[in-house]
Image 1 (cartoon, rainbow, N blue to C red):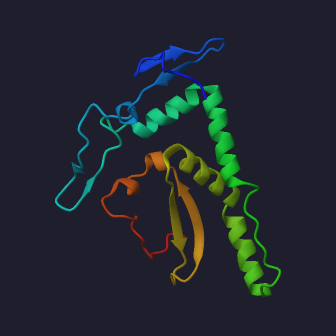
Image 2 (cartoon, rainbow, N blue to C red; image 1 turned 180 degrees about the horizontal axis):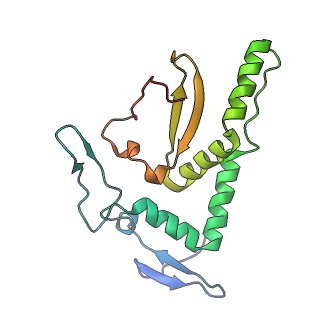
Image 3 (cartoon, helix red, strand yellow; image 1 turned 120 degrees about the horizontal axis):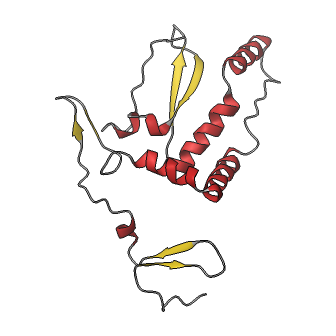
Amino acid sequence: MSDFSFIPPTSVVTIPGAHASAAFTSKTSEVFKEEHNIAPIIINDKMKYIPWGGDNQMPYNIIDLIESDETMSTCQMFNAEVCYGSGLVYDTELATAQVQAQVDDFMLDNDLASYFLGVCQDFKHFGFCVSVIILNEDACRIVRIVRKQACYSTTSRLPTPFGTISSRSRA
């Protein structure tokens, strides 16, 4: 174990032999402390949302930080790919011909590889993801699943624990 007693409690130190710096702090709550009070933004009597950080720009700042550092960007993509694994594999071997056809149609209409990789990226960047599930007219079968980019979603900031679920078809 290294001895960092020579480093002040809160400081930024250049790492010898590398083009990098390290931030040291004894209180991590100070690193992520907002300068502004974060209170719900009231839209009307029935609707309000929680801003993302004091300036409501946190997801964009996270994306900028990731994209501005080649190593960080590569590592985050690697993390998403590790989370994603070898992708989605479905098996309809024991299903009826009708179910096999429905699964094949669903897979043709939905790019699940792209969907799952995007979901994994959102989990790695923001710690959550947002999916839109579209049902058929009878609301008995999923016909589409779409990833809504987490940084552009207000669903996660609404005061309800889960987003709104609607059975109306948009397909």
